[in-house]
Image (cartoon, rainbow, N blue to C red; front, side, top):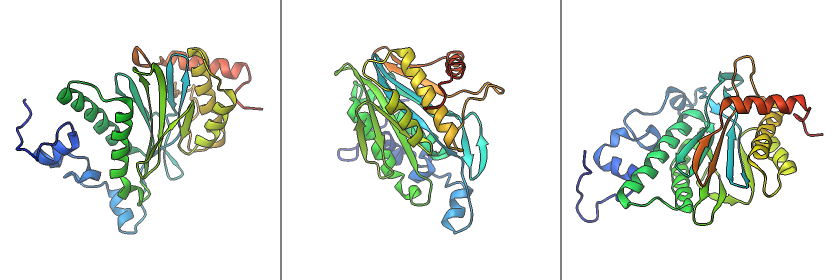
Length: 277
């Protein structure tokens, strides 16, 4: 299927959401005006009735010698209930970047899918990939377009990281609900357990961490966050559920095998390093 031809001044260019608005507006996510409309819980909030949606919680990112480690717990909560025990919150954005989400789970996952498609569409139309700053700007625009939902308590707060091929280093960007984005120097965490996770990383981070050290620090940060924050899920050895941990290096995005993450947790607990003293 070829792209449609637009007259001068009406061409959306590499903007995938803009293309959908012109050729298939019903395919847009509901929070951008798609035909599906908001979920019942959103309508309930708008009408002053009680309504809750699953929310994802804690995600972290930190730089290491070869790039960036990004990790997220697996729990989604709905009020004071556990809505899902194995939600994934860390995703590849493209070959050399990753995005993690905290906040309203449904809109967050839709935003990630649209972001992934936008980056792929841009590369196909322009013939080159966006710069890392350009990707961060695109995600910020999507968060800003979601602001009306944030006013209803359905905020999405992503964490974006990638490997900058021009600078030959990993970079991390944080966001606020208005779409503002800020580059972090070495590490970041967001979500309900973000404060505890950030403290752990701050105490353990140093320049030039190895791959193994960086994964262990990310795992320890999530463990400590789960120990203090009820909405953050810790390791679940009974069900075999462990945080998603991913790396972004010059070779691209890769997910750390779950067996390795489980082994890191087991080693962490065996050495009594779960809690900071």
